Length: 228
Image 1 (cartoon, rainbow, N blue to C red):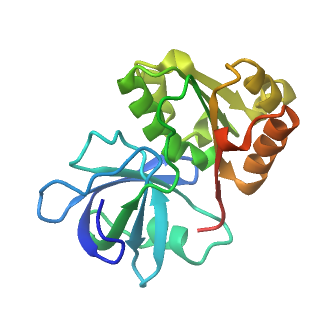
Image 2 (spheres, rainbow, N blue to C red):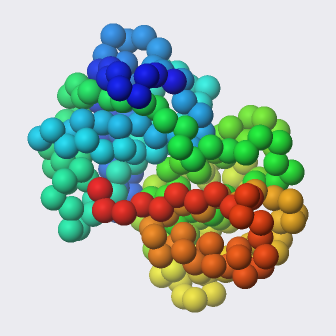
């Protein structure tokens, strides 16, 4: 971790098309050294072209100190952060960064972790899946998206050693393929910790289902994304 007020330069090593409306970014230290450590679920603040500061979740394994992987959805109504990333950011650009912050952490010692991702909300949950697998901890990841074309990190997840723990829910296939939050909760141990990340409506549905099932608040962790 770094001091919250301290900034450090990162360089955009790669920028690519990750999914429909989503670009991936690989950031490295400007001096070629190690980056500040982060925990799964952590985020990084970047000052983007035009002077806009935005925070983004880090998607790679916390053991990787040589890079940060980000995925940024282009919000149609955005004139700020996502527009700057998609339209003005270039490979080789150097950006001031702050953090990382552990603002959506995994609970230690959970008997099971249920990861619920909606759209671009997959980003911090990929890092969580990496960490849980490395620790030998049981988990299940449910990923809801419009389709595989809109699912960031789909190829990575399908090739991962924990691919059998990933459940896909693509809304373009019909109602039967949509994520049933209540059913997902019913399939995991009662002492599981639940992590929901995605658009505000997705997270609200997850919370409503968990509370309806009587899930304890201390085992319910959420992060909602708005326009960036």
